[in-house]
Image 1 (spheres, one colour):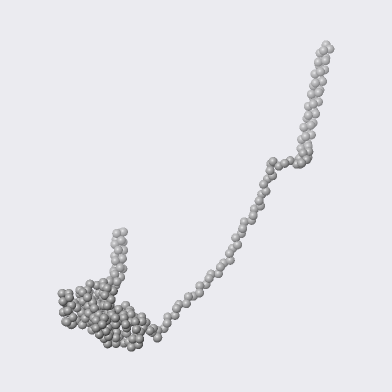
Image 2 (cartoon, one colour):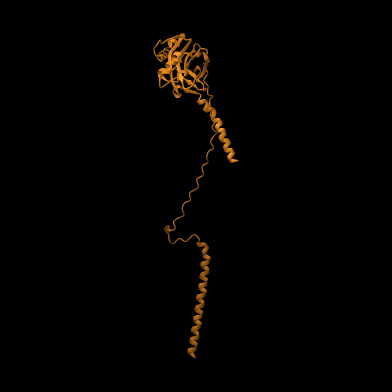
Amino acid sequence: MKKFIALLICALLVMCMAPATVFAADVFDVDDVDNYATFIDSFYWNGVRLNNGDVARYTIDEYMENSSYYETRETCGFLGWVCFYEPVKVFGYMINGELVTDESFAWQDNTALASVVEKWWPGSGELVCEYEITVPIKDLYGTNEIVAVAVLESGDIVKLNSELEPTRDTTTVFEFEPDPNATATPEPTEAPTEEPTAEPETPTEEPADEPTEEPAGDATAEPADDATDAPADAATKAPETKKEGCGSFVSGSAVIMIAAAAAGLVMKKKNH
């Protein structure tokens, strides 16, 4: 039974972890996916190709940083090509993390580009795919991050960004003005915390001081100055003293009488 419960818990853990793993592996940066190459040729603003042979990334940076362009905004776009180790199913873009795809963004019949890439990497010509992606930005407000993406045949979503090759990065971040029609979210007002009424403290009764017993008089206390003073209980001892005196008197008389009788007997013997 214990083994069955342990197996059941393990199975539940695997089931809980599986969806998170799939979701985390669903979107990749281009630097983390095997590819022959990716490239961005041009940047568009309102359908007009801007860089005319210059590095497209520089034009993207210019339009990101110059807010004066924002007043005329309708669309922005990217023109470029990719060559992964597997075919591209569809192109699109992610705006603030939300994916939008359109089959019309892909140009897969550019034979001239395919033949050039084939010379660079034999066997790659049939995997080359060119894209032209258009992103509507007229109704956007606040901060918006936009990046071109390719959805591969395996279902993996690859963002066409790059830290290894920054000039091939399609990421743009536009700081448009806030939406004037947006209702500001009021900040929550913290309810005042009522302090509990302190209960009156029960006075602590201090224990009554116990009287300190004075130590008994020292046994070696000096005697009273008048040595002839009678003790306090002299009156109660008087009868005892009288009784002892009477006994002494009787005893003394008896001795005298016995002595006199003895003397008389002696004298009587001498006379005979």
